[in-house]
Amino acid sequence: MMSIIDFFFDYGSPTSYLAYVQMPGVAKRTGATINYKPFLLGGVYQATQNRSPMEIPAKRDWMLEDMKFFAKRYGVAFQFNPHFPINTLHLMRGAMYAQREGFLVPYSDAIFKAMWVDAKNLGDVAVIAQTLKDAGLDGRRIIEATQEPAVKDSLKAATEEASKRGLFGAPTVFVGSQMFFGQDRVQFVEELVAATR
Image 1 (spheres, rainbow, N blue to C red):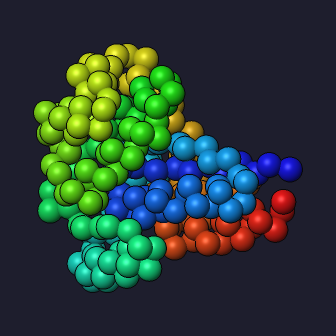
Image 2: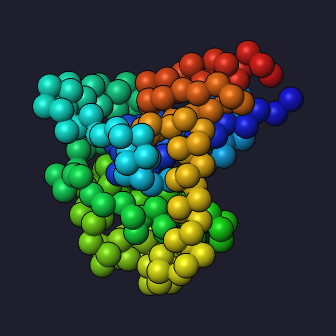
Image 3: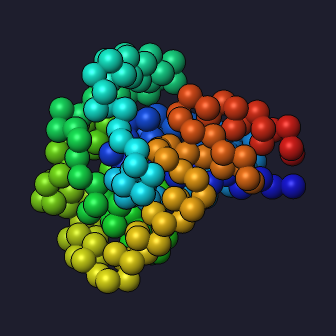
């Protein structure tokens, strides 16, 4: 039986990036299908009265070192973006358009790399457009699409779905009804999927 892994993420979350880069390997090793689920983390924070752990000084200091630890463990490039926090509204609307048009993975690859490897200021629409162009995508069209009512509504609906499923942060992963929060739980996701094959 093929398993489906629902992967909820926001590009502004560095731990979403660390989990995202693990997903292809999980899919390959387990045969699972990854159902990528972009949503607006700020909207979920508002709905759940939560806030970023990066706003708490002691937790922020610990997380910065922890993320470096996991990036090294995973063997992936990572640098904390000096422009953090970045408003990801345009990025996440772009993700909804990319999902609709069937190129969410290459879009996500480009945005996550720009955000957490190249440390670009993706709060600037011109930087977003150029980043997408450099990745071989139609940056101008994607930026235009972020202003379409249908795209805006799809992001609102995705964020509402995330809240209804009990999300309070990112990344969050579901295998069936089992929820896992945090990039350090990816190995447990894989173990569960492997055990149910």
